[in-house]
Length: 619
Image (tube, rainbow, N blue to C red; front, side, top):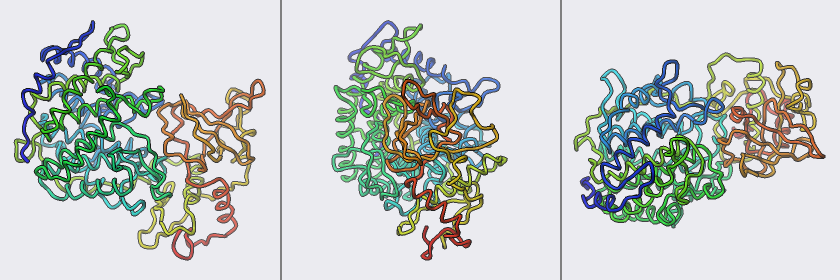
């Protein structure tokens, strides 16, 4: 199917009515561009990576050094590339190019060493999608000695398609996180598979290479088979491998729908309007509008009403606006239905941009009609994307190799990438060794000896890579003695956080090991747990960006150097995890007794020196 422009009537539709406040108007093309210019300026004020002494490409962070994780900067550059494409304003192009190239990493695959230890498939995928946007929009190409946009998107796709990223748990699909030690490694979710599907579908349309379309087909089919996309085209968050992904977390987030909408539109285009892909696209559109656009205004259903959105979630609306607007170019039959809704939503978005001293700062809640008092790059990006997208009818549709694309590709890009992110090359401290030994056995504790599903375990530092044929694994660190209540204290034995004299020597290490009883997240991420003595208490994370969605009741949680608050008025206090410490907390998909049993078995010789597998070669 040939790509065509959205009918000129679309522009007339967008301009037929405007909403203005003291700061902004979108009543005409010139007004839209002026409003987008001002919002773009306010958005870029959150970025300081182009200043001397700062790191190009990233927003301030990650916590506690700033509010933003690495992936959101990748999303920002995609937003700014679209801004240039839709408005013609090249003010930020040099900054965008510098940022996009600085973060490619040594293998030119958006796996920079500074972030691989905490890398998720979705994180890498957002940078890959922005590179794909640059190729499709004919964003100025980098110098010839630098990586090119199309090749970068191909590198991200190839690393995600690597056998190292795929296994048979849940019948296939990508895990959320890439390193074994990350919270979420045992979780397969829609966004990780969605970005892979999105890039694959767009590469298929751009290059006509069936490798990409085959993966896109396979990924969609898996999403339906596993139940993450249901018969009504609701897209649910994900499920855990130890439950064969049957314990589906039915939270719905708009960016999941957006990423699949654009991918499905590209597959519809690539297949010349195949009926199967039209049915899928139509179903997704209906589901998306029903859930996320009440009264035709963008609404983040999972968190907006009760003010529980994390910093990440505060940016989702903008991606949906961008991807749905491009969808109307890739699948033009959708324009008549989608463009009026995007207009209404953008009107609501810009109407509430009246905050702060400049009286034009944008908040998150659009449906209320008033500024909600929040400030952030995500909130600004949302409205920037919504306003810029009003110009989609005047913009050139995404190009391809056969329709004027100039970006140079490399189908083998990413083939030299290291997809095994378990190796830690920084200097190893005493505390590292203690934590690594504990993590080794906690991970092993999560695998039941009678299961027929092999849970892949990488071990080295802290774990060595398993032999792919024998699945054998050997511990490389001292075996932790969980009976040692000094190293593994109960809650009542933890030092009090505001009693400076009670804490152990700073060189010592101790770990709170407890079992999750209930997720009590309301305003802050919180779980109720029970310790080795059976006492129940709460663990609260000061970092609101901590995502506890994958954590299940009955799991074991490990908090390094945990302290408790001072007991007051008959209350025992709780464990407070300070900002920036949340990434050090680990979770194991097994109960506390299972963890202790394995520790005892290994220390007492119940597991042979030849490995930690049973006689069948299983864990």
